[in-house]
Amino acid sequence: MQLVKFNLLKLHTLHIFDEYGPLSPPAWAVLAGFYPIRAAYSYLNRLRRYQLLARSRPRGLLMYRLTAKGAARLAWLQQQSFVKGKSE
Image (cartoon, rainbow, N blue to C red; front, side, top):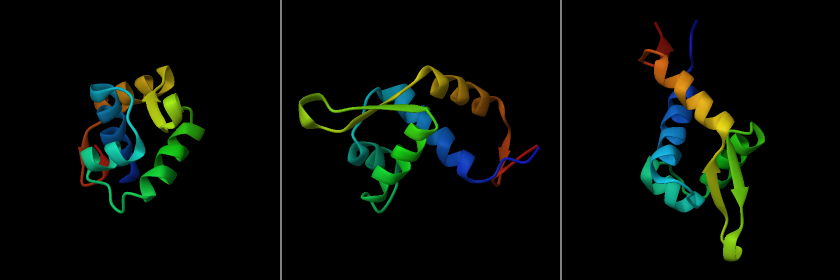
């Protein structure tokens, strides 16, 4: 089975949320090296639609956190062998 490059970004993203906990899109973008930073809002919202992240607005600040489904996906992705965007 081949895993395309976007799974590498998903693995990195879910790992960051697992390690750091709730983050705002700009904070995640800096940790992930994801640029332009404004694109982080769209990417994290896509993962929210997949139910891998949950969104909240404490004190008016947009925050995302890892869901149980996201943690399960992270565990599965960590079991894969990634070589140049493909799984062996």
